[in-house]
Length: 279
Image (cartoon, rainbow, N blue to C red):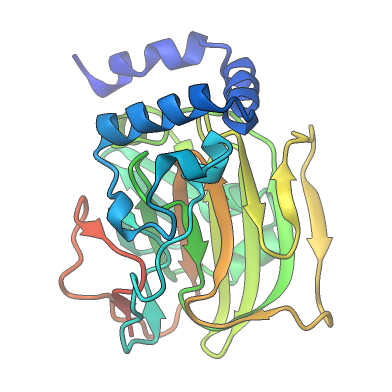
């Protein structure tokens, strides 16, 4: 079966209703029922609880609390690199932006303008630049950290669909990452502007940032912006910047400046927070 046929049922599913229901369940505190759900999830996805700050499943009041669990101190040391990997997960794609086109999968590209919610001026800063798309599976640690020190300037909420973002869907749904609901975070760094996009997906109940809290819900019907210039919101390399409530994808954009990706990186390779991403 082709990937396009495999994802056809996703076009028919009431994805927003599914997300609303899953978010309600994930946020509920149901005692032994919640603990049972967490234990089954750990077994199903082989989650490594030995590295969690709280390793006992019964210590989490809700599934969301478990899913956004903290790691033990020192579990993810930072490499000596200009850019460190911001998440645990797997590499979807990375490389050069061709004019304004980002490679998604064989036969699929999408534009930087579409990704950032239609702001052509913002997107133009990344013409012929670089990108990296990183996929977080259900078993992964789901907090997102800064790849370098950066000062926040803008955040843009972009409404959209809620397709799955797993590799098969990336191969089967055109423009997936510029089509799904997302939160675009814009930073100034010592190496120029950086865009870090949190992409929503089916059963992703919400996305949150450390400076705003939960961004969605509510799921706004229009593009919504927040501006932070002059507020001094600077995050150190490795500092937490946000989190997903259930799995999804992060897309990063760099301008057309010298950047050398880790030579060990290849699509589908597992990655860990803090490892060298680029210099």
